[in-house]
Amino acid sequence: MVRKLPQDRLTVALPKGRLFDQVISIFASAGIIENLIKQDSRKLILQVDKFNFLLVRAKDVPVYVEYGVADIGVAGDDLLFETKPDVYIPVDLGVGACTIMVAGLPEDRNKYFSNPTSLKVATKYPNIARDFFGKKGVKVQIIELYGSIELAPLVGLADFIVDIVETGRTLRENGLVVLEEISPSSAKLIVNRASYKTKSEEVMPLIEKLENTLVKG
Ligand code: PRP
Image (cartoon, rainbow, N blue to C red; front, side, top):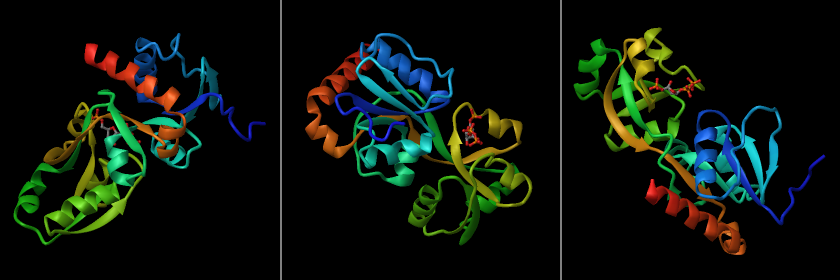
């Protein structure tokens, strides 16, 4: 039973799923780890080279890093804008590129652009949606969902959605259109504020190796 991770290693929280392989491949190209790591077991802690890797839900990465259980992690701007964790964000890894958008049914385009005073919006990003419409002076009723956001306007749960769009396929296949762009998003390296100082001998070279690899691209 692990209660405390070995402190002589850097602990890295990585999102399971789509981004994992891309991040691991950047770490390997940068010479941070020797070999690629596969997500083929159910293990949640992987001790590889000089690192403890924690495999967590994307949304939980900033939590592990902010609380200092992980020294570093990888998280998309979408999550960072949504949860505003108190962490350093030193490197844009360039992967996981997507755009945070407002979308809806084409027949609701006029409703959206005719200066509405209030809108019903489904999203897994309630803070981003509230900030965005707040700045426009539009009142929003937020319906918070955890996935398949595109379903909401199709069945009348909400008129519009705020969500990330990567290839645009989910919108297209469900007959939805982009109405407005909120912000681009890509994966960032995030670092716990205390680790940035107390473990700078390990953290700084890691940042430099990543920057060198990404510049060479
Ligand atoms: C995300 C997002 C969109 C989709 C966009 O969902 O919420 O639904 O990807 O990608 P596309 O533009 O390439 O179609 P995800 O796959 O993470 O699943 P979820 O619906 O369970 O959140």
